[in-house]
Amino acid sequence: MIIKNHLILFLKGMAMGISDLIPGISGGTIALLLGIYEKFIQSLKSINYSTLIYLLKLDFKKLNDQLNFNFILPVFVGILISIFLFSSLISYLLINHKILLFSFFFGLIFFSSLKLIASLNPNSLFDFSLIFSGLTLGLSLLFIGQLSLSDSIISVFFSGFIAISAMLLPGISGSYILLILGKYQFMLDSISSLLWTNILVFAFGAVFGILSFSKIIFWLLNKYYKSTILFLSGIMLGALNKVWPWQNNNDLILPIHNISDLTLPIIIFIISGIISHYLNTK
Image (cartoon, rainbow, N blue to C red; front, side, top):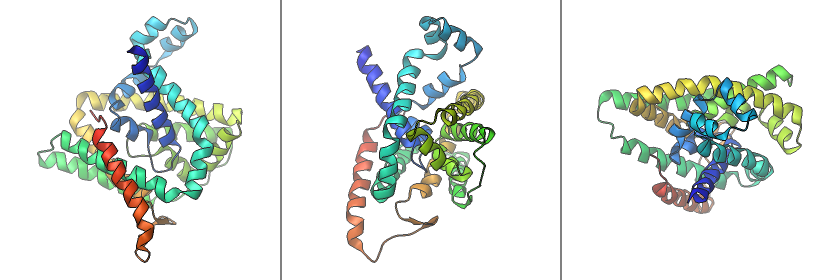
């Protein structure tokens, strides 16, 4: 039973890692849809200096007490393995089958977000204003232009810090933030080519981002769970514009002149809705 639970957590981690490779999709989104978001954030916010000491001493009992190690380890291993294993495949799919790939994730996030909102039973003007505020923030991502940063170590570190902070928020894609910073293809090539200097500097930036930002999110979830999840659900719905299957230079289009081109994407969209129905979002 323990092995089965670890395998499930590992697969959920892999799903998070794959999503983080796709601009417009957040690992935090997938964690929320798979029902592990709160526990994931709780484990991350517990990381401190003692964690390193326990790790060096191989004191897994204290690590488990501090971080829920039995949970976070298979998730993290799944994330890391999928990033290295699927970076080339995702690059291929984004180039050759982007419409079908985005059709699946658009449907998955759309249906699951609505399901999550419904499960929280929003019943006040304040609740709906939170959803609308999140929706507005998510939509605003469409209007952010790409920056141009150098490939210096400081820029790579900064990119890791910002991208991981975005990854922790459902609806805000770490990969899309890297696109805005002009570092998406740079890091994808670094991972595919195993350029360890870039990978390690980026990873250090990501660690600092995790240590700081996870504590803020955990506090919000602990104090204002319903309000926080409603707001994050709104962000997920608003940010769907980044995974709309038909885009042309940030313009959202629909191939109405060739209805046959819509058949397979619609089928995939429906399948994703069926899958979302069985996801545990609580």
